[in-house]
Image (cartoon, rainbow, N blue to C red; front, side, top):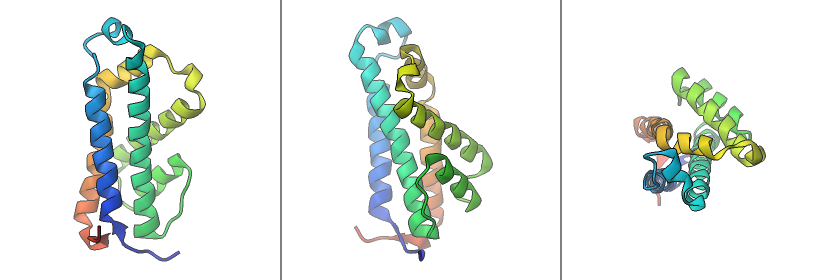
Amino acid sequence: MTPRYISQRVIADRLELVDSLLEKTATLPLDGLAQFLADDRNVSAAESNIRRSLEALMDMGRHILAKGFASGVTEYKEIVARLHKHGVLAKPEADLMHMMAGYRNRLVHLYHEVTEEELYQLAAHHLDDIRHIRDALQQWVEENAHLVSRDL
């Protein structure tokens, strides 16, 4: 595998998706657990938006690795390890994203163990963690513009 250019379109699409999903999640009634649980759709929306935003971050990381470093990775936790190894993420961000990768796997594979209260806590108090990783990836791409294709 040979390094190629990172696609500006892929990065922009994933950033836009994360922003959109976080914005939708922030509009849910997050002032209190009872209000959040008053409508079952809130739980479903929070789960879907959080899971999909984590997947978009992982996909962005996978794309950076594949195109920028010719490093093919499929496992989410390995994506994070390689992003750190290649200097895309500093240790604190890699640790946070590693935890997010594990949580995404839990949402998908151990969904029956994820409680409504847990989803409320994530939606109400941890969206900034997702934004932090989103911003770290965007910053790295901007700082390494020479690796990015401007073709849309």
